[in-house]
Length: 71
Image (cartoon, rainbow, N blue to C red; front, top):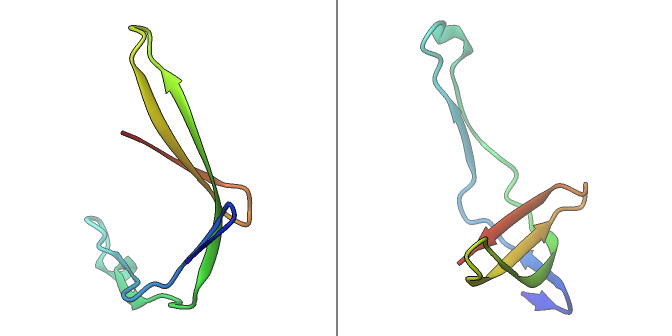
């Protein structure tokens, strides 16, 4: 769902898994919270050193961390 500059995600499958090459006692495979979460987003454009223009999508979580995607 998108409202203004905020999008809400509804995870269907959310798992966390880790396999240690050194110690199998550290291995885990567990379900994670599947509740909805929201992130704000910003759409911008940028260019590289060759003048090529591309779009950027920045997702910002509630704690301020950012994920940036480009085309």
